[in-house]
Image (tube, rainbow over all chains, first blue to last red; front, side):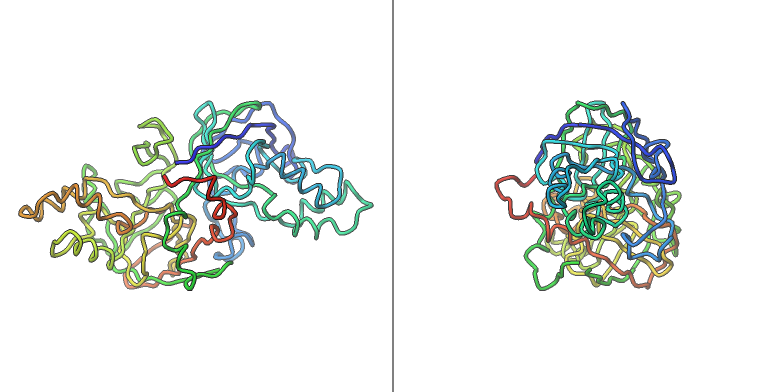
Length: 199
Length: 199
């Protein structure tokens, strides 16, 4: 078992249900459906192009309840795009963490445990789409093609999505225990190169 | 994307809620909580030694709603234990599949799509525990130490557990499309041997 740590830097939720932009809050009370009042709250959601195995708009279990960004990866995104900074609010983050290198590469099936006992289950990378890039563009109008460049440059930097495995509260300036899922290490799949192809 | 196939050989649910032994049924109607009437039905469950990150008995999201075995791996278990056959009923299987090599190694995050549109989400390997070994022992009293040997020999053969991602019906003799999660292939974690240790 590999248990690593990260720090909670900020908490955010959507204020306006028509927008994915989030605003800072002092505390989040996680429920099994997600964050009450947040745009992504719900046991189920409608599928989109991130779940290509379903016809678009199919009702499926909601694995995108909570979005987490890393402070260091936000800075790296800003550097690559040549902008002064990227606010986690623009990307719809619910939690900003620090102190965990390559956070966006956290494997699916990893757990994030908070001091209250609350726990999030990593459902994988949050693949970049064009909408946050459009918000970034609106804040840096002088820099060309930010939406398109965001989609390309934000891979591996845009954080992860999680579902709630155990209810409870989260507050800033606390430490997260991250139980990394290492199942791929002992999968024979890894050795069977002829059987697999990268998506 | 890698999409492979398997075949539904049998469907089973628990009849007696005090036992994990399952019995054959002609159809299963998957709900977001699992299989109605089955022992493992529920949005949440109490944690046990399979979820060591929580104190035993903690209420958490239920990722073990549905248990799936492969026919070929059942045969291989019987061969290794030196018994004539192992019935999927004894292991509490809900679905028996065939035609998918190394089924127990299907990575977490893979999807199993059924012709009705119903879908299961792979939550990882079903780690062997001693109870099915005791049932096997009771059926082969002349063979020594089957419970202990089962725990050891059934690794990689005991199938997977799933949660329901999309509701719908399942019937035998149908084909499953399996969308294999290959995220580990492009994780830099794989290259960072110094950062990881096998659980």
